[in-house]
Length: 85
Image (cartoon, rainbow, N blue to C red; front, side, top):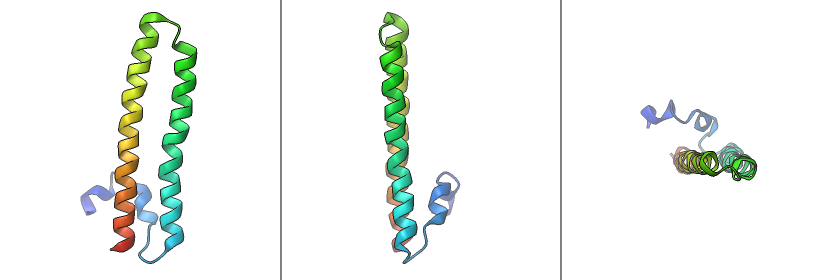
């Protein structure tokens, strides 16, 4: 668990038995992909009309969004584990 702490620095705020620290951490992990999705949608809307560039940007931003969504999901799971631990 200590090896993962350097990859998930937001989870250092979570304290055992402190519900508010857990809720704040989960909210951060939920807001990040939502904001990224909005930005990705706007960029796809702007660049989507250009045939080659639009397709490349859409694919690249989709891959990045998926990876960040997975990172946030793992971060939420680890935050709950830190809270329970």
